[in-house]
Length: 524
Image 1 (cartoon, one colour):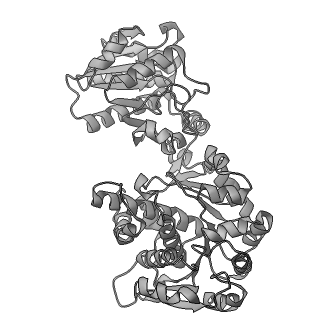
Image 2 (image 1 turned 90 degrees about the horizontal axis):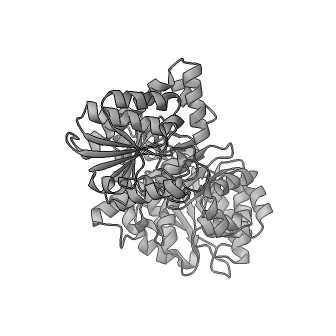
C-alpha cells in the first residue's frame, strides 16, 4: 500500500476535485462516514452514548462537524460539539457543515473551560482539531485542549491524524493527542506508521473516500508499507504435484563465522531453510567446522574453508569460497567474521567477485565501512544485486556519521545508503525501512520489542537470502523478508504470552506459519 505525505494528499484532493469533478464536500462527507463506521465497529452500538467532538476551523474541523451530524442523526448518540474557533472564521465546506449540523439540531459551542468535564463524562472523544496542516509547535489554547483530551482517560478517535502530530515525519509538535484509533483517509500517512507517531496514532484504519484509482496510484508517491497480499504476490508458488523439486527454490550459500562465533552462522543457515530455500550450505572456517556441524540442523550442508591466523576467512579461503558460489542462487555474508585485517581483505575481494545475489550483514558491513568510499564502489559496481542490512550503528559507519544522526532521520539515512551504495538498503529498527536506489521506500510494520535481542538480525539475514534464492528481486526480497521476520516475532510473542524473554532461535519455528499467514491473506 502506498503511503502519502500531507502535500501529496493535497495534490490528490486537487486532482480529484478539478480533474474528476468530485465536489470537495462529497469527499468530506465520505470521510465523515468512514469515521462513524469505524467508531461503530470499534466501540459497538453508539446509541445513547455520550460523544464529545472537538473541531478546528479548517477541513479537519469540517470533517468533525459532519461526523457529529451522522453520530446524532443516524446512530442516536448524545453528541456535544465544541468549536475551537469563532463561527465567522469557518469557510468553505467547514462552514457548510456547521450550518448543516445546527440545522440537524446540534448545539455547537465555542471552547469553554467546562469542556474538560465534558471530556471526562464522554464515552468517546473525537479529535478533529488540527489535521495535517500544522507546522509549528502546538501550545496555548490548543495545547490545553489536547491535554484535557489526554487526561480524560476516555477513548479518543483522531480524524486523519492525531492533533499535534507531524503527518510526514511522525514527530510530536508540542502537545499531541494520544489516540486510541486514528481513521485516516485514502492512503496512510507516513507519520502514523513510524515512531514516535505510531505510539500516538493507536490503531490505524484507512478509510476509502472514493478517490479515483489513477489519483491514488500517482507515480510520485514512492513510499509503501508492506501488506500480506504483497508478500503473497512476490513469493513463488509451491504447487502440489510431481513437478515441484528443491532446485526450483534456490540454493543459499552462507559465509560466516570465526573462532568463538558459531551461533550466528547456524541461525542464518537455519532461517534460510525455514524460509523455503531448496538447499542451504554453510561455509565456515575449518577451525569451527566440527562445532558448527554439531549444532546446525541436518538439512543444512556444511563446508569447512581454510582458516586464517585470525580464526576467520583469509586469502587462502577466497578461491574455494568463490568456487562454491557458482552453485548458489543467493549468498549471505558477514555474521561472526570478526573485524581483523585478513577478514577485511577477504570481504572486499569476495564482494567484488561474487557472481550471485548477495546479502551483506554484520561484520561484513563494518569491514566495508573501514574504507567507505572503496566499500561503496565495490558494492555499486557488482554485476549481481546486493542488500545491505545495517542496524543504526552500522549504518552510521557506512555513511561516515554516527548513530544519533542516523536515528534523527532514519528515512534520510536509508535513502542515502541506497543511493551511495547503489543497492537496496535495509535499516533495522522498531520500524525497519527498506530503500532502493530509485527512491522507492518500504516501511515495515510487523515486529515487537521482544525482537530487540541478539541473533534476531542473523535470522533476518537468512530470511532475506532465502527469498533472493527463490528469485525475488532485491527490493521485494527485503520488503517481504522484513515483514515475514517481524510477523514471525509477533507470532512467537503471542505463543509465549508476551514479548519478554523472546530469543532469536524462537523465531525459526514461526517462520513457516508467518509465510502461511501471508499466503492465506490474513493480516499480520
